Structure formats: structure tokens, C-alpha cells
Length: 321
Image (tube, rainbow, N blue to C red):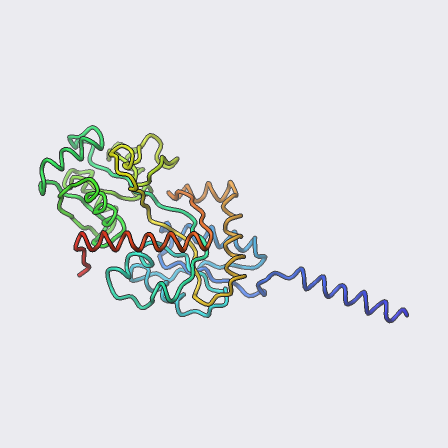
């Protein structure tokens, strides 16, 4: 009798221990960041890795695999086992835009499954303080009245900033000459100096220069006001451009074939993480407008972005040489 009771107690203890085990075994999860340290996607990826470690009860390790405009790290995840142990800290360039402009070693629709969108990096329309327009309406009127006279800068041909500016020009009816640079810092330096008329660049890149008086801000690329840019109106409302709502997104994706329960658990953990005031402060601190979307909504959003940017590229005859 005592032996049977001891066996029953041991069995119950084992059952409770099994229930207490996390869905993941104890090996580390790798959060692949296809950009170098210090870049916005890297900072977001590190916050996500830390908080997933806490939520899942096991290490989630950031792994920078930079190069080729984010395509090296993205391809690494595309070819990783679909077991939930390799995550992609994904972003607009390598996932949405690069496949529309050049041959990539991965097929986004075939190789990846969305887990959750985390947020958007909005863009701000800026000029030098000396530019002869007091607001966005005056800027549009001036450039429209002088087709081909004015120039606009971007961080490079085919960059998200370039496509956002092209879409703004299309929607506002502007004809201006594109001047590509190697990076947003160089582009904004020449805009601030008056060598190039205007640019649309990220909040993170523009707002320090706006606050210091080196640039003037005319409007925001989102269709709603943002706490990241107090006092700056959305271009959608100030210029009556309905539907003008765009930003560089950042989210989490996994290789196709990853089990759905794993995807659901990751998505839920990210959603919970983003309710944390500490996390919200850290992410907004790198210029991110928080916009959590679970897996299915994120998948729909990605399709919309793919369609939009394909249209911009086609209408603007944009090519990467």
C-alpha cells in the first residue's frame, strides 16, 4: 500500500513538472538582425530578444548578420530550420522593397511566415529653414508651379525614403529631380545646406536637426498625429491626401513551416511585451511609432505594402543599377 502511494505521489510530481516546462526546450532562440549594431532595427531586435527571454523562460539571443542591404541575414533565416528557434527581426527594405527591385536569394511569400508587427518608423518632409515656403501647402504650390526646377534627396535609389518621397510627389502632383546619397545623414546635410530642396526621411534622422533649427518640418507621412513629432501635421490632412499613410515597418517573421502553436505563442508574447511602459519608452526612444499587429493582420499589412510599393516603383520607373 505504501509502495503504491509513493508511486502515485512520484507520478503526480512528474506530471506537474511536465506541465511547468515551457513550450520551448532549454536551448537558446536566435533573433537574427540583418543590420549592424546601432541601427534602429538592431535596437528593436535587442529589446524584443530581452523580453522574449523573460516571457519564454529561456535565452533569446540577438545575432547581427549584416550586409547586402539586409539580405544576408534575411536569407540566413529563410534557410534555417522551421522549428521556432530562429527568428527574423524583419524590416521594410529586405522584405518588402528589395524583392521588387532586384533578384534576392529568398522568396518572401514562399520562405517566411509573419509573427507580429511591432511598429513603424514614420517619415518627415523637411527643407532648409531658408526654403521659401511657410507650410506644406506653400511648398507644394511652389514646386508644382516650377516643374523640374527643384530637387529632392534620399538615402539612396530604391531606399524606403526614396519611395516614400516618390509617392508623395505622385500624390501631390510634383515633378522634381531625385538626388540619391549614400545614407540619410549625407542627404540631410545637403538639404540643411540648401543644395537640395527637400527630403522625406525618418523621424530618427530628421527630428534632432529639426529641434536644433537646422531643418524645417512640413509634415508627417502617417495619416494621424504622432507623439514622436509634436506639432507636426500629417500630410494626409494638411494637403488633403487621403490614404497617404506610410512608414518603414519592423516586425518578427519565422521560416515557413514553423508550427502554428509556436507562432501563436511568440505573437502573444510580443503583444504582451508591448504593453510594458518600459518597452514602449525604449521603442519610441528610437523613433518607432508602436503598432502591434498579430500574425494574420501583419500578413494582410505586408500584402498591402507589397502592392503599394510595386505600384510606386512601376509608375516612377525606378531601377537599381
